[in-house]
Each structure stands twice: as structure tokens, then as C-alpha cells.
Image: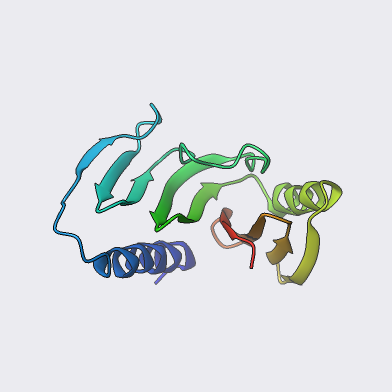
Amino acid sequence: MKKRAFAILIAALLALTMLSGCGSTNTGGTSNAGGTGNTKVNVGGSSVETGQAWPANWPTDIPKLDGKVKSSVSTDVHSNTGLSVFLSVSDVSVVKAYADKLVSQGYKSGTVLDEGGDYAASLKGSAYSVSVTFSHDTNDASVTVTAAQ
């Protein structure tokens, strides 16, 4: 299974697992998320947004990685937000420059893996933790944002 497909599967399963514990019989509804074209489903005060655009609730203080969005998922469960965007980018330099930009904005660099053309970095800010990855096999990248712990 390709890395991107596996990552999407994990994100979707995580979202469904988090929503299954809501305990509400309110099935909510679906809507166009902030005019993005993404689909947003509301269930018992929690929501999941999926599509092929940046999530409507992407934090304004976190830059968007330059590339073509292939898919995205955003979960908001009991005010805990998680966002992931999967993109096609030109090469690894785009992803490395993105990580450097976050560091210049005050994010602290954590684990960095840079091997065989693949790249992964974790960064922590005061409000958010950001993980960014790149696969040289497909020129796919991902950006995942969670609340900082």
C-alpha cells in the first residue's frame, strides 16, 4: 500500500474512532465547508471535513505548503482539532523550505529524517504541533497540524 493511501486511511480511521465515542444520537448533517468544496459532517457537536482543498478551519498563522492538494481531512472532536493535507509538490526542496519557514516563525524543530530523498520533520509552536513529510517515490507531501501538548 502506498504511503499516502496508508496515511489517509489512518487519518480517516482516527476521525471515525474519535466520533464513535460521542454518545449522541444527533446525526447532524453535511454542508459545504466554508465554500472550499470540501464536505463537512457534523455529529453531536463534533465534525469531520474531507475533500480536495485546504480545510476551512486551517489556522491563519500556519502557512499553506505550496503544492496541489490531493486530499484533506479535518476533525474537531470536543474542541480538539486535527488537520491533515496531502499534496503533490515539485520536489523535496519545497517541503524543506516550508519547515525552515515555520522555524523562522518561532517553531522549534524536533525530529528530522532526511534520507534517500524522503524527508520528515516535526515542529512545535506555542499553539500547534506541525508534522511535514515528503516521499520521493511519488513527490507527495503531507502537512499535519494538532494542538500543541
